[in-house]
Length: 484
Image (cartoon, rainbow, N blue to C red; front, side, top):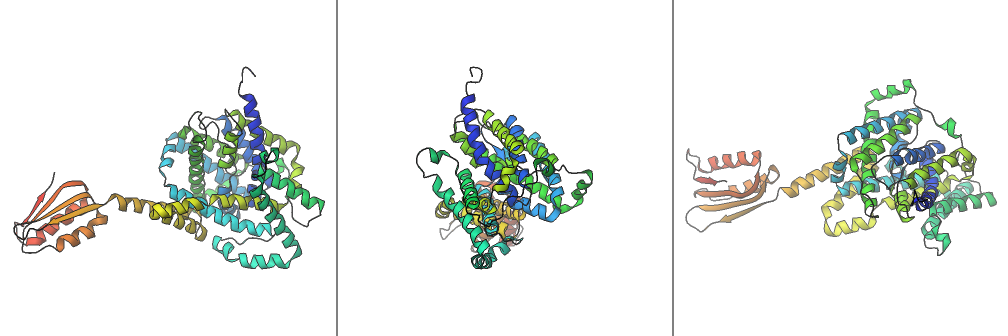
């Protein structure tokens, strides 16, 4: 203990993180349409591989609810064997971005786009898991999921088994919401674990007719991609999915790192190294045919709050997951699927920034609009294109706001009309500038002062010269341009 003075705190924290991560690893895997064991594999790799690498000392990596929708779509479109290739490609791309020192640039991404992405994921995740909670199969598209909910509710209320399944899922959500309010030692138990244990006990005690997790075995579930599987890389859609995995996983991990840094006073995150650590973890996950990983704020904050001091806590949490997967895999078969659906519904709800949206709407409606459009685009179209739409809107908004220009016209009734331009004159403001200039008297000379401009782009410069020439129609126009 003298050699490792903080080991006691780290061991205790690792047990807390393990108990938080266990139901989430299984739930994310089931919701992604892959064997439950693959979620544990990703959690193990997140602890034993990513946890050992430099970058962020206290944040914890594993399968994340934020990638559930994208993983499900990839497995549905290209098959489970192709998942390893996609995750491997995303990991290698993350490694390349880390080597090129692109990690810090993720900090420049619009927060509204990121929150809109998470909100869109949350909406699709909630809609899909509502079907799972009733034991029904969810439609493929996000819009179809939402539009089909009334029919699914009617089917659930009409069937005894579906109603029982829905009751288990709803009960799980209620336990999750209320558990943290319990006083004493009970409240210290992770809510997700308590909810799963209670749901498992109730369904077993009363023989509730609900589906449970299908257990295949750890070694049977791990299927590294074969050489013939790499043929999917010729599909443009697969390449787009790899890019989407890499960008979204990187953004979520690095934003999580920034959030975790605000929770403790220890070493700060080194973003490029953390990006490479995430890439190494995803590369290993891809080679094992497992789920992609990101840093997860729920587990990371639990790690900090439990008193972790070094990266030993996140490594040890991977050890506990490995021991559970090796020694107690049959315990997974007791877990009711609607209980896992309830956990993910709760996780999806927390992805939607309700308070943040209200605050943005009061102070920065443009940013609130970007958040909403990004979320809706993800639901209506898909994850990757929805994020691109949000980024495009963010760029347009920034360009518009940075091109503010002020025009002051001074007309004393005699002599030249004086026009002063200040700010940034870009093509986005050109219609306003030309409208003002073309409204000036045609029979009077004009003095156009540009000395207060911070920026004058080529489009504006050319347009001003052409306007000056047209204003008089002579070789010596009565427009005097004053520049720096």
